[in-house]
Image (cartoon, rainbow, N blue to C red; front, side):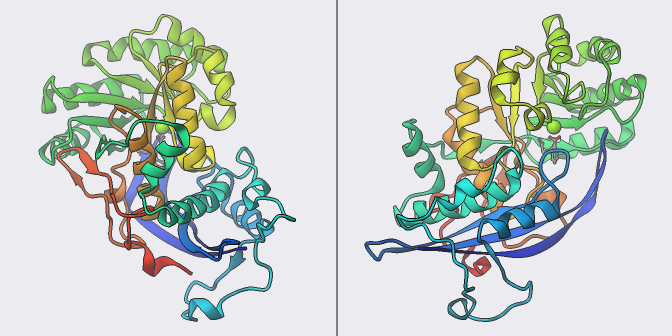
Length: 379
Ligand SMILES: O=C(O)CCC(=O)c1ccccc1C(=O)O
Ligand SMILES: [Mg+2]
């Protein structure tokens, strides 16, 4: 028998993250808790997080409805009732006569909802097996032991050239050697001026990425990538709107810089993206792909097709960020990942067990997500 409950939360960003698709100002979602009791009477608890972001996932209300329909019950945000008294009358039953609760959540329709429940169940399973989530993930996929640290990029929003260069310089001072800069919210000339200022500020040894969030059409993308050539970018992420894989493939065919796809994975099957030969790199967002398990399998399938995965958050709260760190740790020799997003949030659900030090995150090695770190979040 598995009981599952959800509790809503809302977090503000320190300042809006300006992108070509507009600003991201706040993040709302649900903490999902599960309590499993197996037939052999062993019992495990786990915590997950569903933090939808329209454009990448379903809406907040669709996420909530999907979780409720799957049998996850609501706990009031300020409910102080002891866990034992909170039990609702309609628990998810995973006995032999019922289906796995996860199968009630369609990862294509409601990926954030599936992420929340899949993560809570994976956390419970890993805790039960007395190993970390990344150790659990690699065991399921027959991979080598997970990495102890994961390299990460700093995330820099749209701003004028001076402010962009100042943010870049301060990230490098903090120890980052890979920076991702949002582009596409201003003219090609203006973005080129921003990259000129950033390159001048940080020197040649720092890896630079650009993320256009689908801002350009094909001629503009071609012109922009040519303009960006002197800045020696590692890749340009989502230069074109997500829908048109053909255009992305045509752009990539003679582009002077590697192409990464992000939003395209929310709009198309991974197989379609890989078959189109439209990407050198794919951005694996566990929240957008429907869970840590699906994110890791997407990363491995991409690798097998010669496309390198980069794991990022959707600016999630601490539970989902920590899960994304475990996913990244399970991918052998993963490139710098977009996981250093705690600093974009004004506050969080719990203390961060994944501090960024010298451009890398140490992967928590306690049981499940991070040992006891999220015990107080269970509902
Ligand atoms: O990749 C990163 O550095 C952080 C994550 C990020 O940029 C992001 C965060 C929320 C929504 C979309 C995106 C994106 O990659 O486009
Ligand atoms: Mg992106």
